[in-house]
Picture (cartoon, rainbow, N blue to C red):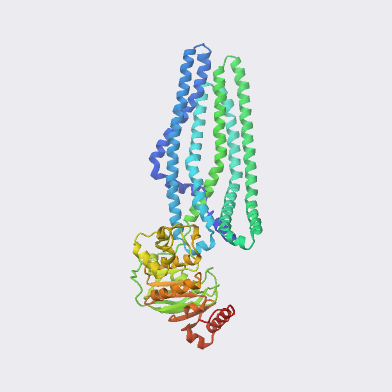
Length: 599
């Protein structure tokens, strides 16, 4: 959590003005509709201001003159004005909501596309929950800014300006009494903004912590329950919530104080209007209708003040969200594509690691140290060694999830950094030890929703890895919907689907990362013949923890603490009596201790 928090701090390096300035280009495609919305908003506020004047006319003219027919006309005009106000208000709010939704859809798409291009190292440091908050929560805060807050603030300014202009034309002295409140409220709002802005920024960060932790803990509920760690997890979540609660409580207390202050000032200014207006009305310098109109306008004045105080929090959340969104968009951690990629038609001769050094942390803590080897086309090579020795790192570098700090990786003599990432990875099939299935049916999980695989090709891939047995027994066969992460099929069946997924594209290079680790012995025996057939004539790299699965490969490369220390066939390595031989004897002894026959 600490490293992720640091990433968030780094993203907040963008200034508030810069973040807001970068939001403006998102609105340019909608500037025509925005102009129409502004005109509708202005019209609605002008019509809204007419209401108190009609009330003034009804009191001073119609009621005072006992003109009840005229009073009916005034009342009808008042109702008509309110009706027109509601219609114009409805039209511009609907259109602003449409604009806001379209802007946010475009921004979410841009964010998601950018996230997909980021390197694996970025996800090593940033929890998924935080990224979900960027895509969903922060963009939603911006949508509210566009559709509600900006409209409310502009409307408030138009309403206040129009109201004071109208009041001044009727009674400048009483307008001066009302104007006393403007500098007081303005100063209060300014300091309210200054005090609460850093608090809302902190709350936003703490909320991201809560979201990230909830995502991780809920996904790991099964493990939490198995190991009876619910009490500890509750303690951690309580601590994370407490860190959010404390600054939010302070911010909310300030909000309460601010709103009480505004309410007091509203009461105070109405009292002043009643006192001075009442005296002037008694002296004949002011009509009762005008006094009622001014009191109505005072209440109308404080409505946008209340809105401004409320929307400042929304603005602060939106600014914080914008800073984090653009901080993420500015993150340039994607594996770089070559300016002029070399066309690589496919593997013709060999894969070569040439003096490769690599560190995940970028320091001297190397996961691979001066590793060199060559895999000829069509051969089956295996990587053996204990967990953490560097086997998976070899695969990560070959697939360009990371780039080495020293040395280079070649395919047919071409540095893989000179080949487009898509061109490189499209020639490689990968079966991972951890199986990830997406929402959808069995067929879409095998093809990953690619449209260039026909049904027969999918069926053939499943048949070769013996996945057709359980698929054909399911009610909807390849159209069977999978639960989250494939929870409605067994782990072994999920592993078979991952085999089919890798093989449906008929890759030239096949990588198996302990591919049978989740398959029971009976299922493993069923797919061994299919794997042998698939690997024949295909360049294959097998990462194995169980050495019994790599006895018949062309060469075994033993990696220990990032160094390639031994290589050869199984029998040759046993005869050497080195590190591989010790590993094999250790596993053989453990297997015999559990009653397993020697391979």
